[in-house]
Length: 507
Image: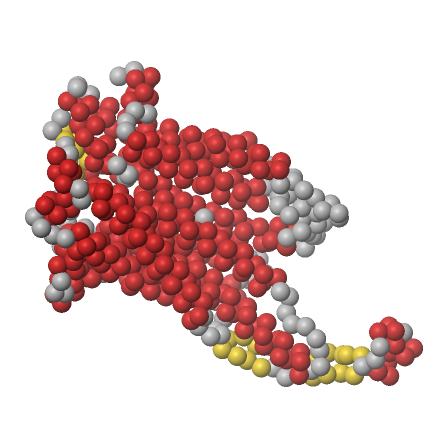
C-alpha cells in the first residue's frame, strides 16, 4: 500500500472519525503548550554573580529565583497528565465504527500490518497537526504577551526561547508517543475480515496489589525530609531526593488508578449482593464485567486530585506557620507576619489543579459518551424487551457514581499523606529576641536619640500542630463529584438517542 493511499485512508471516515481526529489534535495542542511553557521556564539563564543572584527582569518570584524554576516547570509538566489522558479517551471515540471500517479493509485485501499502520498513522497525523498548531499558538502568544511594565519587568518569560532541538523534541516527540501508545493499545487486537476481536477480559476481580504501590509512594515521601536533613555539605545524597519524589509520586498515582479497578469490582459485588432495583443490578454486572473501565475513565481526575490533596496539605502547613508567627508578633508588639510568597504561590498551584480538573472533566465526558455509543445496540435491545429508559439512565448513573465516590476519597487521602510527608507535622515560631524602637520614625532613625527608645523583646517559642485541611479537601471532593455529575448529565443526553430501536439494525 502506497504511503499516499495509507494517508488518505487514515483521514477518511464518518463525522465520528472527524470528531476523534479533532479532539486528538486539540489534546496534542494543549500538551504542546504545557510542554513548551515548561521548557521556556527552564531556558531562563542564571544571572551572573553569586548563587543567590536573581533574574530581576521578571515580576514573579517563581521566575526570578533560580531555585524555584525547576518546581515551576515540573508543575507545568504535570498539566500534561490530564491532557494526555484526554487524548487517550478521545482515541477510543467511535471505536466500534472504526473496527467495522478496518474489517472492511481486511476484506478488501489489506494485511493486518497495513491495518495497524493505518490506525497508528491516523493517531500520529492528528497529534502532529495539534502540535504544529500548538507551536504556532505558542510563538504568536509569546509576541502578544511580551509587555514590559514601567520598570521594564515582565510578567512571563517572553524574552527567552527554548532551543531548536527542544522545540522539535516536543513538536515531533508527542506524535511519536501517541503512535507508540496506539501500538501498545492494539497489541491485544486482532483484525480479520469478519470483524475486530480482542482478548477476553479476566474473569476474576483485580487483586489488592495497588495498596503496595500506594504504600511505597507514601513511604518515599515520608523519608524525603530525613534524607534532606542528613545531606552533608558535600551533597552526597542530593541525587536521592528527586528520585524519591518522582518515584513516590508515580507509584502512588499508579496505585490509586489501579486501585480504582479493585474498588469498581467490589462495588459491583456489593451492589449485586444488596441491591434490589434493576438499575443497580445492571450497573453491578457492568462493574464486575469490566472493572478496569473506572481506572481508564477516572485516571486523569484522580491524578489531579492526588496533587490537589498534596497542595492542600502544603497550604495548611504554610497557613499555620503564617498564623502562628502573626500571633507571636502581636504578642511582642510587632507588625506583620511571614513572607506571603508561599501562600501566594499556592494560589497558582490551586489554579493549575482547577485547570487539570476541568480538562479531566472533558475526558470523563468523552469516555462516558463513548461507552454509551459503543453499547447502543445492547441498550436498544434492553429497551425493545421492555426495560424503561429511566432504568437505563439510573443504571448509567450507578455505574459512574459507585466507583467514583470511594476513588475520589482514596485519591484525596493519598494526596494528603504525600503532602504531609513533605511538610512537618508541627510548626514553631518565636524562640528569640528582637529590638524595637518605641518612638517616631524620625527619632528612631537618629542615632543620637534612638538608643533611649530601643528595647529588647523576647519572643517565646510556641509549637502548633498542622491541622488536616478538611475544608479544602471537602471542596476538592465536592468539585470532583460535581464533575462526575455533569458528566452523567451529558451522557444521559446521548443515551436517549442511542436507545432508539433503529440501532438494532446497525451493522
